[in-house]
Amino acid sequence: MIPQLERVVRALETDGDVRVVVFDSAVDGFFLTHYDLRAPLGDTTELPAGPTGLPALPDLLARISRAPVVSIAAIRGRATGVGSELALASDMRFASRERALLSQWEVGAGLVPGGGPLERLPRLIGRGRALEVLLGADDIDGELAERYGYVNRALPDADLDAFVDALASRIASFDKQAIAATKRLVDRASLPVDGDLAPGWDAFLASVQRPAAQARIERLLDEGLQEPGDVENRLGHHVGQLGL
Image (tube, rainbow, N blue to C red; front, side):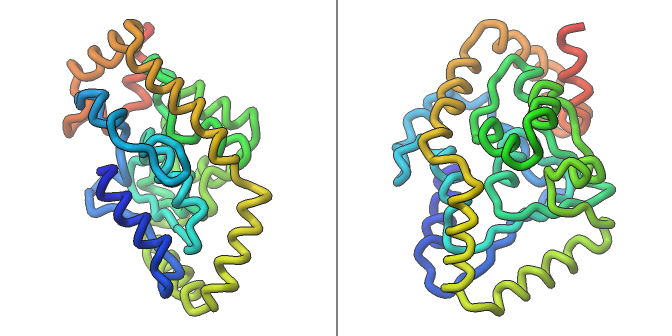
């Protein structure tokens, strides 16, 4: 996914006409899931650093936040781990009230979240709520995500697409230079410095190799992680059972 997403981000950075991009999913029940824990770690660590100087994945997420286009995440289904991190890197998030589930599940599996939620969530929802999300490692439904400020709004599922399309079309009708300049100045006041994202990624890579994390991940994989079924559908519940 990372090389494919890099091509998309590069196009958004260089296209002189695009004003808005909407990230959504064609997979029923999921916006985007977590990091692939069966893949060799080198598949990620051997990718070259990006233009920000960060490793590939945090580089892409930082560039989405700073691209001169407006990024909107339309969340229908589960946004777990990297899925939540992509949503957090986007400029706006709109969720299905009935079907959205957001989660930073990593601590429950012995991992440290590495794609920017340690830096973005406290700015977005405050320190206490960020720690609840990160350390609780549980699922956050659309209604609670709206109340906390994790998403801009939670809308009835039947209304989500029409609302996002209308907002995206409205913004896209405005002057690109005005959009880009406004976003750039808001970014200065609200985004973490790119270099501040590096320690979180380093901590994730270190944590995923720890024996305690490996044991928890292996147990989840044995129970059905990364396969269609109950573990992925109720990941917050299953993570909460690991230490009992």
